[in-house]
Image (tube, rainbow, N blue to C red; front, side, top):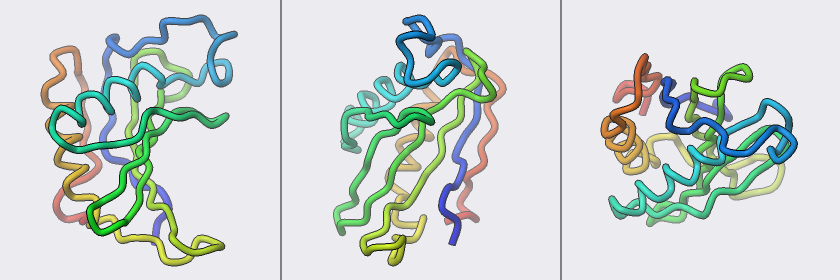
Length: 136
């Protein structure tokens, strides 16, 4: 099973970093504004995530299904860009050493919410969906 599945890539100046590189997780690593917007938009749809969190590689929000399956949505910029974004999905294993990852199909409600969110972005261009019903 894959450990990370890309959902959608797009361009938008709406999520350009507000703070300089010195204030970012790492220089050239952006996504805080995107993660905050996404978690807020999804909450408005009833798809509840965690508050955005960060690692040295970027930003993510956690999502737990009604059945207890857990996923993380990675929210980040592409190749140091300040206007090209990628959302990816990572299943979170329930057991040690990465065993017992939930199937990506369990995140269908989340993916539908992300489709709605990105579809509502007036500022989005060059939208490329990597996730479709055949991937579930």
